[in-house]
Length: 269
Picture 1 (cartoon, rainbow, N blue to C red):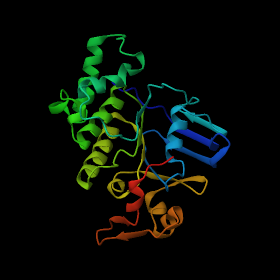
Picture 2 (spheres, rainbow, N blue to C red; picture 1 turned 120 degrees about the vertical axis):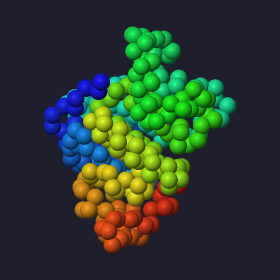
Picture 3 (cartoon, rainbow, N blue to C red; picture 1 turned 90 degrees about the horizontal axis):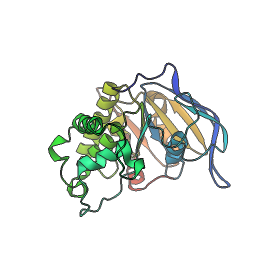
């Protein structure tokens, strides 16, 4: 069972800055994320969205300011933080079964040496696979699966560690619109069922608009956060991406963003 989330904010940034070597990427970022929130992370290419996740994961240190994650300084290998990296093309001849791939979410850092209760680990793997509705193909080679099926198993791998927080770096990239919506709704359902805090990087906000609580955007060397209705406007997004972006509303009050299609073909720094 996933432990209950801590009371209060699970991420607290105070005048946080990020850099690669001597190159400052963004600075003066002060924000907090509450337990159970679903946050979409937006921004133009190279703005430093993935860098934000690396800071939360403890993979790089802050260039300035402070960052607290689940009440502590971020550190590598924190099992309480699940991570789904940008999906790369998986070799179709890779013989690893989907089930074994998911198992790496529990002991992938131990180089194949089983530690702890093996039966319990298998149960956790089964539960993670079932939670993403992937049992029917979990025993097939992962390289032979479709992009949507692989993405489900990547989610299962992150969930197998029973985290309190889930970081997803462009999980909707390279998927068709139908699978983007399916995966976005699946993540939202998993977050609610497991009381997870979610930070999800995306280029196309449209599949996420019905489910996100707030939007955090990274641009022009800074970071800001707000409700979708405040951030997702024609003026804000056009300034954010430094290109024409239009936010439309239908007669039912639903929002649609037009003009970010070119962004989805690229990856972030």
